[in-house]
Length: 105
Image (cartoon, rainbow, N blue to C red; front, side):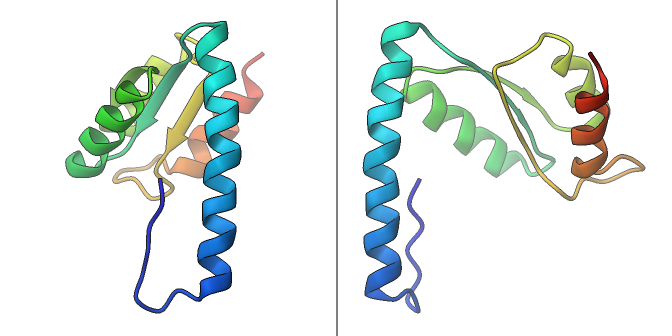
């Protein structure tokens, strides 16, 4: 995903486009091997739906969670990739989720 801001420099844009090209090569290889499971954890429904649609469009199987507790429960399904919001409402933050997942063998 490329975000362009009015204050972005030309050098920054060139780096972003280059990274996007590298992503496309990796993405194509991943699609050939089979679909990848992705878990998206975010309390903002607009971001959650946008990421879900974009990733599904690219061929990924996407599971979503709108809270930290729900995200931890769905992480037990062992997705290949977890995209997690860093700041979540409640007692569990995105950093806490990462720590708990890393501690779980």
